[in-house]
Image (cartoon, one colour):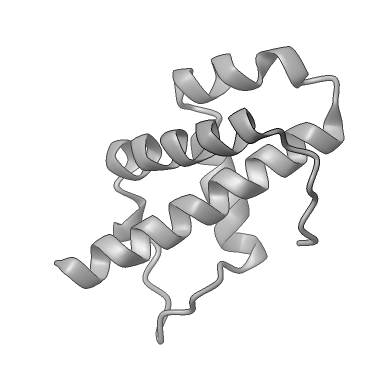
Length: 95
């Protein structure tokens, strides 16, 4: 997935905060253990994470105002999904 950079500094901050919450809430690292672990998520990994994020109230509340801005929404989803993946791998290594 191509990286899109239309996020403002607060979006980047919020993406990291939501990624931390999502990693803890979904415990996705149990599902995301590629063999061997890859430092970057596949498209399937990102789509799986994004689908899960849309079940998270805090995530949906934050993106609600820019649902009509597809580029910003895509960039935000991609950024959060990538952060969740990396946090998930880091937590899996710690265990």
